[in-house]
Image (cartoon, rainbow, N blue to C red; front, top):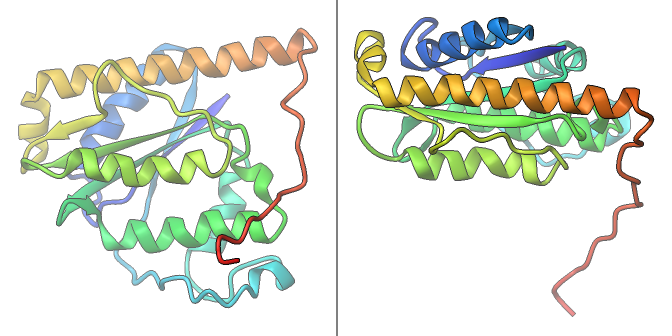
Length: 211
């Protein structure tokens, strides 16, 4: 079992990375592999709402999103981390995940995320974390992904990596989140081995509120 840890910060080893690294250490202790995926600093184009992905099976914008989806299909769970910019996830994360989740769905590759556990973490100097977590969690709830929690909202505080390490409650919650993720994955695997089927899938129904 393997978890993808998504670092949405432009800083490769900054505050968000520090939180994800604590998660990675704890997952390893629980016998779960993980990898940290760095979003990088290259520009990420926003979704054009062109729906071309439903026809050609991938996004028409030539950046890292298509490569990410190919990479992500090999993982059993996801933890997406973002720094807080203006009380929300940073712009690169929003553009990246909008396209990644929509392309997976529209191109018929929803299984990349479907029923796989997901979690979000937010890093901030001071405020905006809960709004960011609410924003990121919506990617999971629209994709039938069980949301994994810690014992508090999944956030760390600090302006530097060293300051984040001093947020003892935040770092503890990262460890609790990691153990909860590991537990869910092990339970899911046990259920599969016991012959418990995955939830039945229905054809999607759309209701137009304009009558």
